[in-house]
Amino acid sequence: MSHSPIQPTILSRPVYGELEPRSGSQHLFVADAEGGEAILDMARAAPEGFFDKAHIIFIPKETGQSLVARLESLKPAQLHIAPSYSAVVPRLHRVLSSAHMGLQLYLSGTEGLMGQAMLEATNQGIPHTAIQTEHRGSLCRRVQCVHCKGITEDVTMDPFQCSHCGLHLFVRDHYSRRMAAFQGVCVDAENPGDIPEPVERFP
Amino acid sequence: MTIVFKEESFRDDFTYSNSDWAIQRFPFPFDKDSYMYSVNMERHVPVQAGSVFEAAFDVDEHYVSEMRDRALVLAEDPLRCQSLPHMTLAGWDVLELIMTSKAADYPEHFELHRDGDTWRWINRPLGIDQSFTFLDETTLPYGPLEYITRQAQGDFAVLDQRDDNLWMDAGMVTTQADWSLDFDIGMNFFEWHAPVPKAHEMGIFQRALQYLLNIRQGEPARRLNWTMTVNPLLDTSPENYHKWGVMRGELTPENIGQKLHLRVELQTFYRLPRSNGLLFPIRCYLISLQDLVTVPKWGRRLHRVIRDLPEELATYKGFIDNRPLILEYLSKYDDGAPTSPGIFPD
Image 1: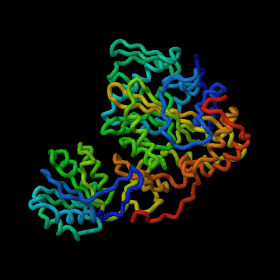
Image 2: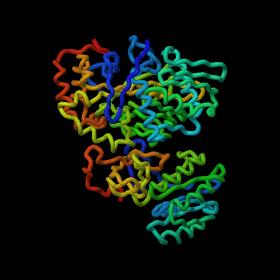
Image 3: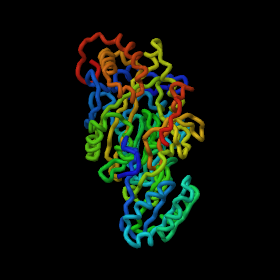
Image 4: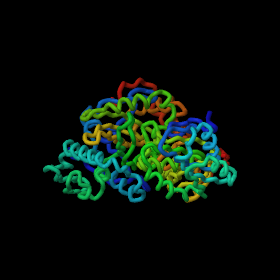
């Protein structure tokens, strides 16, 4: 049973599963916030010695220190606590670029985190269908403004104001893996100034 | 036949218009008095001399002005033409297909001379005389796909075929009905069609994909699609929706005949020989309502189609708010008389 309320809508909208231990030569985890709990839950089903070959990259966000000690107790070969996804990118790039056949990749947490890490992995030749994902925590979305092309992170309201060009955008379910983002489209194009009251659709 | 190319604009003062010749050959998309999605594919073979179905890539009086409009769009937004790295060979396939077809169909306007890999391309309407080496990108001013589609009307999606699916991995898209190549590039057939209502549940895309996966070299297919556009605006892109969306509110009973256009896409599908990709040209034709109703059969039929169209489709096609105004205008041209089968004028 998934812990996520995300349901399939249109066919470009990603859906997520539940992490499960697979056999592999190396296990790479990338998680943010409550995504750390998905790793802990999966660990219960993991065979002895599983984490000897594991590298966990964790971005606590608002979970602060609450999950860090429990992740340490899994005794992964490497545990890297990072302040943000963008701070993680060089490390992730380095690890993926030297990865061998048999690497298992596990992503958990917000859609923005999973989408971006997946993009990094697919750019390094890992097919997206071979990557495990589990959504946990906030429903916030990473949204690309179709007009100025700027991406706004952690969008919770719909409509919202583009953090780059300032247009008021409604958030579609149409999703691009290549952008790791949903599409935002001007909400008042046909009636300038007629902007609906924002609703917290992605708490 | 020598075509006289018009000087006209698709923006600002919108001087675009159709001659009587262009009206008579307009690809009216309804073969009966109602419309619902269907796979509606047929072989792309010439029918009816002078029609838009005669040449592989139809060239008409709007050619030179459309190519100028494309150049303006690209100058503003180079992301309208993109090609993922593995699609270069397919780009050469496209260049070859368009050059050989245009030279064969319109010898008075286009010439292609080939000596091994040394090619010379002459495009008289655009004043181009280019010698280059086939498959050598350094000998052209743009990549092969961009080079040739700056000289061909309509949008071009280039699809890679793998895993029993089609992937939108390259394209030139400046005359689109509100979809973004930049956002959709890299998506598979179901993903890029995801926002279309109803058709998924009806199995349309599953059947269409099966058909397209089996298209063979030398056996292209075609279908028509349609929507409505206020003003003869080719670039109804999502990128610029915040600029053109407001035009939808500008219709009045007085100006609707001149301002509202039926927008028809002639979609064709070609298997590409080297890459095994599929070329998906989407050629846009625009006709004002006032020109359309000069063909009585079309005036009658369009009234009935728009009147009976399910609300969901009218919303998706973007004219739900304007439907009462459109019906008020078109009803004057529908006397209730029966219409003949097929799309051509009586």
